[in-house]
Amino acid sequence: MRKIMAVVSTAVALSASTLVAAPTAQAAEVNLRSFAWSVEKDGKIHVLYEHWDRNSLPSDVTVRVRAKGGNAVLATLGLNDAGRCTTASACEEQQFWTDPVQLPALGVYTVDLVVRAGTAGELVDRDNGEVNYGLAPKLIATADRQSVSYDHRVVTVNGTLFAQDPNTREIKPFAGAGVYTWFKSPDFRTVTVDKTGRFSAPFEFSGYETSASIDVSFQGNDATFPVAVRKQPLKLAVDTPARTVTAPYGSDVPARGKVTRTADDGTEKPAGGVGVMVDGGHITSTNADGTFSGAFPATRSGATRLELGQEPWFEKWASPYDFQVRTAATSTFSAVEAAVDKYRKVTFSGKLGVTSGSYPAGTTGRVSIDHSSDGQNWSSTGQFTATYGAAFKQTAPLKGSTGSYWRLRHLGATGVESRVYKLGRQYTEIRSDDVTPEGVRKGTKLTAKGTLRQKSGSTWKAYAGQKVRVYFKPATRGAVWKELGSATTLTNGTFSKQFTAQQDGTWQMRYVDTVKTHYASSGREDYVDIR
Image (cartoon, rainbow, N blue to C red; front, side, top):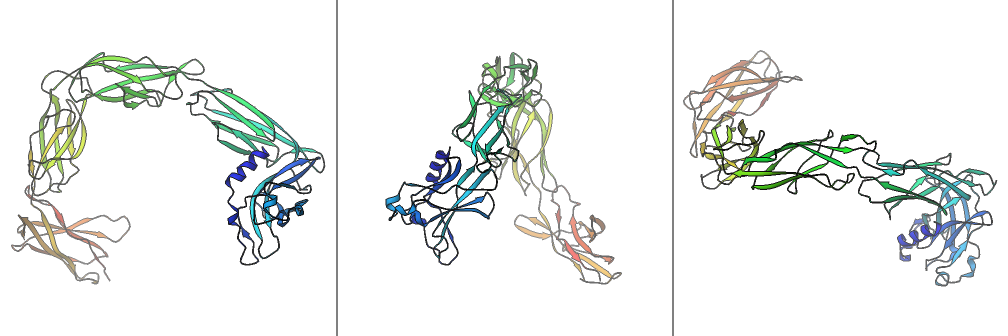
């Protein structure tokens, strides 16, 4: 494992060109191509350094050892026999040992490599390698399961790691050591040993594995745990459709039923999250209780199949449900009404049915609300689902205008449309609205005034004889609008109304008492401060 780590360090190291002299006495941090790791020799732990940098000599290098996550240097070591190299290139790929390192406790420490320590050109490569400070480590590991399934998806490996103290020769927990684990090769991760020498690593399976194993390793101590992936059989029960279905062409026929699985204990239990398909097209997935409710389009007559999708935790196939579909172009709209209200909301109501034949209960159709400015070129403003035989009421996403064309269109059946409706009202607006004077004292008079206009073609004209309401909302938390009074517009469209100033708040004039030929309108919100 030491050699594996060494190779990884080499792969990610940067080139020697990154070595630059620090401009001041403060050390520059760099990534060296050289690397270091720990080895055991004669019952002691040493740091082994491998030289790869061409603009420094081994004799320039000092090894510092720190606790992981700490800054205090616990040991400073030189390289033995470093003087044998007079040029950097002559030492490339050569290894150098340090004297034995003595550290306060067993564990894994980090190594810094320092070039030209103590000089203005000092360079530091922090966390260049690791020191596993312990002798003859002993790894013991067990897995809590030998197989996984839909019911049990996690295997947890528990273990202990002990080692001999290089100083006292006592057997102690190898706290802080990193135990390597493999799962779904080539990925691996490190599990840190706690202060008692224990570690625990859970591995969650996806169900897509055909065979798998979990491997645990530390310095030649290895353990492998094969894991079998058990697939549970499924059972499909269909409530609807019947074995023979007659449905309008383009309608959406309901499909309902339940899917169960044979659990690990041999009992039958619900299977949630299983895809349901009709003729290869996904229509829905099962709920947590195993039930499903979806629909499929009746676009052809003939043999049709309802079956389950391939899911990771279950056997590949469950018995499908085969049935016959008969379609006919019989869909139609009836009792359709369309209107636009004073707030420009366009609403359709009516029923979707058939001219002849029958359909299963719950059969639906997708309906588009279409709009056109000229009655010739149409675009969809939105869609909704209508149940055959049931009344519907839907609001169009698009607001009404002074006059445009609207219709309903069946999306699944060509040519099934409602009649065309021309809907529209005249626009109105409140202009020059104001509450005066500003900053009055409590108890004095305020005047709410403005002008109401209506649009005729492209021209705005005064709108006389109309009631305009005046609303007020106090400047207090939770306050709501309240109508204080109203005024009638004069022949020039103007209106005014006097009120007694009582408190700070916001005023607004609204024209809401419209006839069916006009839209409502509101003025601006005007805040008045009462002194």
